[in-house]
Image (cartoon, rainbow, N blue to C red; front, side):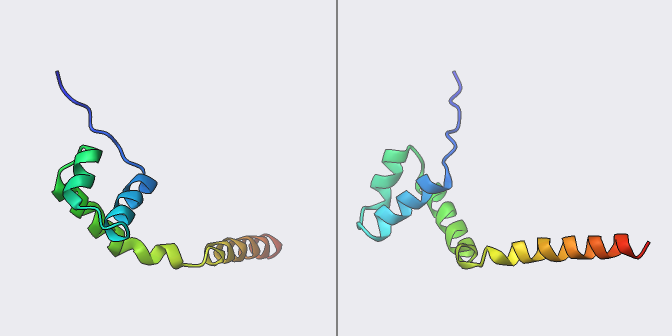
Length: 80
């Protein structure tokens, strides 16, 4: 009988990091509770720290690009 891999949400992963970093829970204990191996935890941690800056980027930046695209589209229609 094969076991299916559990998919963890970003919130579940961050909860594990928080427990380790803030509450000082051992990684081995967190991994045991989640049913994962420590290398998996370390991969998640690496991804978390590599992509952490995205959490601080302004969301209006992407909206500005969309607004600019709309303006450019309207301008292109008028020039025809």
